[in-house]
Image 1 (cartoon, rainbow, N blue to C red):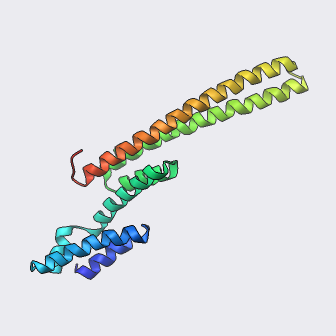
Image 2 (cartoon, rainbow, N blue to C red):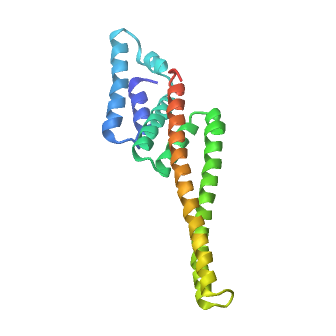
Length: 184
């Protein structure tokens, strides 16, 4: 693969990255080819030294997605960072995606429980008002208990969700350093 093919492939693989960031990355790889040419190294050999552009693009995308997730700190950006990490191999598929989906499922279930408690509170008020099953006082008492449980569950789940996002980002930063060959 020569310089032009290598750079075109890398540019194509990084198309989702905003132009300024992509241009900076591509410039670094252009410099590598220029330095190789100055040292008398053939373009094909310089491309081989750099490695597969698909793997390089995956590593760059992982770093980009992790940085995006740190800036935005929402479920979508963290999920994108996790899936970028999974793209780097089977190890990440097992040790990143599996636990991420499992914990995310538990958090979604806890949010659903919190919402259900709040809906039960509304239903208790309605039933207490109609008076068929229990009196107004009983309905409001049950609604207060249910609403309290819903708010407590929601507050706890919010804290757990924030902690999960923080731990996921910390692990992804660690994983990014590990993939790039740095010290963990």
